[in-house]
Image 1 (cartoon, rainbow, N blue to C red):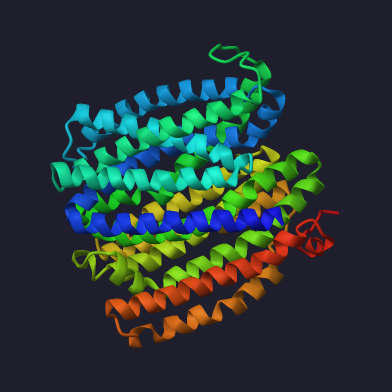
Image 2: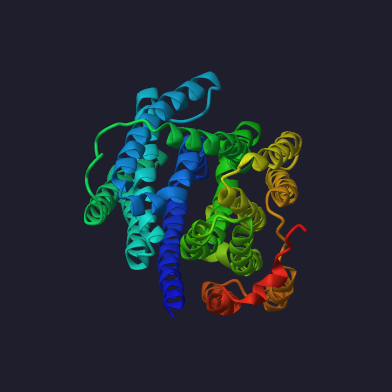
Amino acid sequence: MKEKRDFIVIGLGNILHTLIVFASIRLMTFFLSPKEMGEYSLFYAFGTMFFSLFIVPASLYMQRKVLEWAEAGTLAAYTQKFLIYLSAVGILSGALAVLIKIVFDIALPFSNSTFFILVSAVTVFMNGNAFFFSTFNLFQMRFKYVIFSSLTALFIFIGGAVFVFSFGRNSFNWISGQVVGHLLMMALSGILFFRFISSKESRKGLWTWSRNKEDISGFLTFVFPVVAGSFVLWIQSESYRFFLGRLAGVEMLGLFSVGFTMANRVVEKFDTQFSNFYNPIFYKDIIANDSDEQKIKAWANYAQMYIPSILIAVLFVFSSASLLEKILIDPQYHGVSVETIRWGSVVMGLFSLLSLYRMIGIAKLKMEGILIPYILGAAVMTFSIVFLAPLAPVTGTGFSMAAGAFVSTFTLHIEMKKILPVRFPKKMLLKTSLFSVPLISYLMIDSCVPKDLISCLFFLIVLGGYTAFSIFYLTNNEISSRNLKNNADLIKVAQ
């Protein structure tokens, strides 16, 4: 009963978060021209690059260990070390961003000192806040997590809007307002986080530095392949901003990134709905018993619920692309948005399946298997976009990213099965296909649907409601019976 309640709480929170993101996209596309949107996209390409290099590996390791450290009474001390690390990474990221901007002559309307401050601030404040409030979810404090997640989206939206209204319509003011929003939220979530853990453990070891060879060895063994894999994945998923901006111009980048990023965010919200609910359960399952059989069962339960959510979400975004364009995107971006939304939904769906298989490596603390798939996918994407983007910027870029994501997902499936012999849940895939029929049917009649605002809102609400119902229905039975033997037919253990 508690699991169903938590699922609903997180779902309502994600709906609220998504509405705030929608409002932000609508206002951004109204205030910022395609060129300024391209500059905004380029700036966050730097943010995501340093996130993949320096933050993802440490964050994955922290998430994997948080519950163990909390049980041992050492979470506060490890959090202090993470914050010191995050501050150093912020300074390093700012310096590297300026160096890259100068060497490659990247077209951004910021002075070097301003650029350094913005990149450093985003790196520290955004990721610090994300660590604090995501920890609430790991402890299954669902309500606090939902509140802080939604407040973060609201604060950065308000911050960007206030700065644009007050100081002028440009990418610098929008970014600056978002930085202030992240700063305020990091302060609020940090205070609540330390109050929570100080009530549960001794403050011994806080603000001191000690070196534990076992901790350092385990951390480095885990993060080295993650750093390489995460950076290669960034090349595959985010470096298109640099390529497209250079090959087709910053304005074309702005036109492409609006629809593509919006589709990513919508699918990501469905992915987040599942991950926020089930990741804490997954981590508890794999530390409850260290056997491979237990890890296989944990992943099977995970996949059984994850796949319906993500496939239905992708179909919803793909089929409703024209509705999303009409309602959420300013007319100055129309013309390419429908195609970019559809490419974005497909690419994000493939990346979501990629993350599903990555959970096998996290469970085993063996991430070496991710490197070859990520490198192959990045190579396919890079070579394709260099040749295709100059010929057809939108179609060429979208196809290149989808091809790279497919190659990575397929090869990662093969590599991860060498670590744990799991089987893709085909029965759930068949059931999901049946629930996909109404969404596919709408796609076939989309061109006949009136595109006035009222009609678009009506059809989007209907499709969105059906999508939410389908995901809840398909996962509801698994929430109730995730520990029963009916998951056994999803598992194939090497004999």
